[in-house]
Length: 219
Image (cartoon, rainbow, N blue to C red; front, side, top):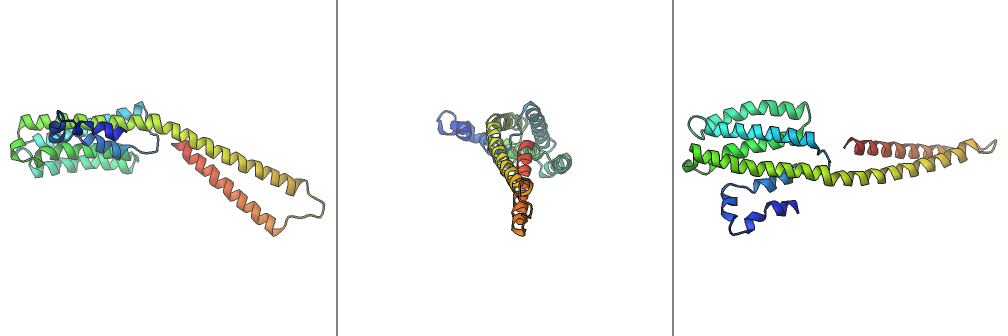
């Protein structure tokens, strides 16, 4: 639904031309890239992702606006400088979605006027392309964070409830098995190898279930 909503101007005759000219379809595309089933939304996540994206949009504009408008050598130099903090953010801190949002914003803003030809390599057109396409990127980022925050959080709660229900079922079965086989057994009724094997299987299932719930709670 969100992708259809973000692509709606492309089906309208009055908005089709500017929607394609300024590549505003990047709003739907970056939403599709950033949205996922891990509910990592929130005010803090939204602010961080927006700040990084805005800085990268400005950096892309500066790369394209620098001397010799749209020079590939200048753009590559700016991209190399940006790659250092983005690599640290991805490899050391594990902020993959923030890094993707920043790099996509820089690539789109810096290469869009360059890809349209020399007629668009002037201050006015570079600025117009930057703020129009940059705004569409920011809209897609905001929508992706809100969907992760609101929708997938309810989905995660449902998954946690089902996992906890399964864990309680295993715990009750294990308690019943332990009390019946080990505590209230006959005097000479020692546990057999088959009983011990079933006990190990039940222990492995409990461990897997606990680890799965731990993974869900980390979301």
